[in-house]
Length: 128
Image (cartoon, rainbow, N blue to C red; front, side, top):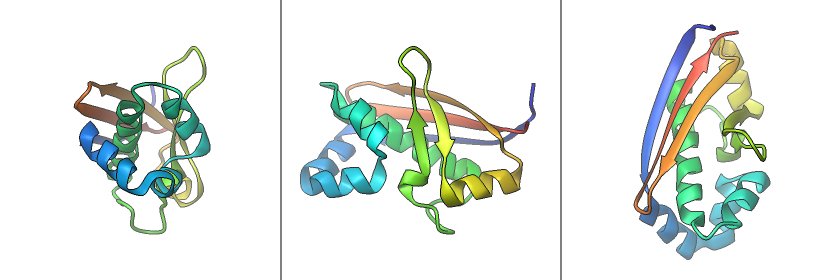
């Protein structure tokens, strides 16, 4: 098994995402989430829970990369992907992908969970 290099975890209140979404609607959604993430979350009646879990995952990855939003990383550079039958996974783009590669992170493990009030994500960056 590849060696763990980094870990990140984040917890988000679902109401925070719902409030931001109510105030900023499409501007917030397109700034923070990729088209695939929006489509997956918004097709559900628990959209805010799904969005909050993805927001937590993005924060967790940025913690694992030790960057936050600094260094040219955009929210959409971290994407939670999902095929129809499998668990979620992480895809990095642009500057986030460069930083992960520089740190030797080539694979991500991700766990998401949410309730009506809280969403949490944990990620582990692995070497080859």
